[in-house]
Image (cartoon, rainbow, N blue to C red):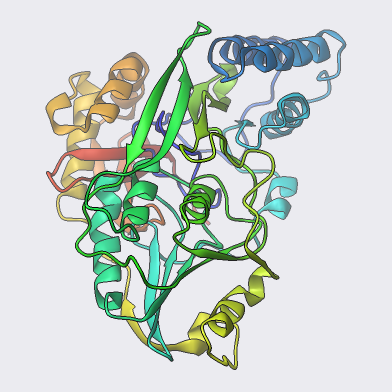
Length: 450
């Protein structure tokens, strides 16, 4: 993930990685199950995870305790029977979270998720969305509605949210639905909050306090309001939440609440406020490591571990109906499809112009080991530099491209392509900024044919 990110996007999608190219298993050819882990591989995973925690976790003392806990478990033989990568990843995640109590911290494995992970995933897939914007509607009583399911990088998010908000500008009240929002970029959160501010002067919305890796020193990133096409300030705004609202989705709800910009209706949110980034481990596993913590300038704290408590508590399934009742309406249903008078935004379903060419160009550049960094956003360029050796090796092994097939627009606004190479296949996700530069890219082995 981006190092200034609130965390992964919805787990059931191929994530758009704002500044990080992801590399699949060592083999370019996808397989149904990754190789079993032997004792040496498990030891290497634990050692790399422990080192990463000690160097990068936001709270050094907690990182030390978490690292020591998995090292002790390895030494005691408690991982000896865990040969399958996903089973080992799940166990490491549980052991780390038992110490850190950090919902962002997790270990992942290559290959298909086990049945246990599938059972814990949301039962319904995420809605079709464009850069996190799923829909916008006008409801009875001159009320607007917009659903935001993710916060991709601001360069990707801005145009769709502006397009969705424009037909709602003259409504008397607005409902912002983040019940299915799994998080994303804090700059995009700040941009959406900006719609509800009166001041034309920049307003400090949130900060991230980052640990400088390998030290016990810290730096601060601040996120401020920016200019939007119009201001919705002064009108009633209701924000719908659920227990599934997480990370950046929670930040939006928290910001709106503490800045007295909106009324929260629904359930207490998930409780994940520590941003971070991905770290490769041994044997193809990886770990999301929170290297920062959010700090609201008004409260001086955040929602980590406790979630954001709504102003009006109700089951998330009833939240839209309750919000409308607060606005003096008498809705006969609870779902937006039944309540919409006019749908005024439809997500893009076609590829972003230039995105296929960007996939082809970047594949070729990586195979040659000569990326054109001038055609990348700064974060992506930095991440590519750090991984260039492994990326060059993998793409040179894949060989020339045989075909590129557009699949869909993903929930974070990425263009998803299946790419067939001479010696393998990958599923790519790529996004371009308004300047044509690549702002996000990721890939993984394609799913085997059904």
